[in-house]
Image (cartoon, rainbow, N blue to C red):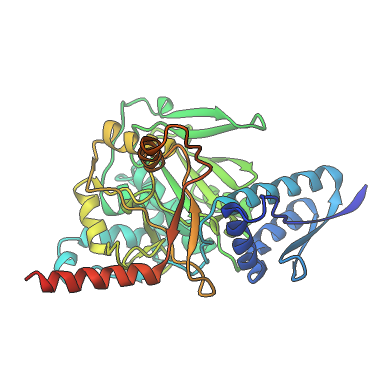
Length: 417
């Protein structure tokens, strides 16, 4: 039976709280780009004949959602929107699809020593790559797990307009790092059970590179069955799992070169991924930029001043810098990089918060209580008064104050010389 269900993306946080202000600001931004939900709408209509309508509701300053379909499907769609709202609430500044730093070539001084990096970028981003060349990457005498991953990434980027980010760009494309714990590929794969009881595949932490992380395009429907068909043309087999915020694709489960996984994230979810954990995880690749690297989040501006060449140098030397408060999850990632993969943590952690939208002068971002920064501030405050009750600790992001601070540092520096 076909029914219709309407609801709003509601801000249920306590008024006058930082969380309320943060979600209200982010919902205001989403209202201005409701096209971001188009891939999700196209997917539901193509796969389940469910019609989703998203409208900006200026009266309530939020989005009004109407779902038309079977009750069971409506429930799942609602769960997807609920999941999105939770991500949006924890997001400091929504990440516009075209944000970040556009792709560019490395500077001349570094580039002369990085021709191998450009070659690997070309393998993944050159839409004119021939079928013979692609076939050799999959089944040629020199084919490896990594060249097969390159071909799968090429299909995603050049056939489906995806953007490749994350660990594969870091470990393989730039670093040329690869590591396997043993010669038994079946032991490289593990499964976890999610809240819905689905078995989610993952590659063990000792395997490098582990997976492919892709963001789906905003302008086109990603047909996962057509993607599978493209893989099958090269006799590449895969299993697909759909969670309420991503596709997980397990590739080459039974091949001798070994399995790998692929995450495909829709644009409305990518919108909430505003923070990065490490500088070396900030690179991405795009179609037909055959020698270029892009940055997901702009960390070139002061006070961070982290340039593309510095990131590449860190990757080549297996160093990384932490760019967000260290909580339990970030600490797990640090341990994986240092204790398991042999990287070195460099410098003091930066807390990179994207700049607020032009309409706002500043942001207040609640600091999670599990972070070392929160615990350090709380400990110092309790030394003042043992009976002190901490309701919240919030970070201030004010670009104008930061510019004034940097200017004062220069003035003082000149006066002291």
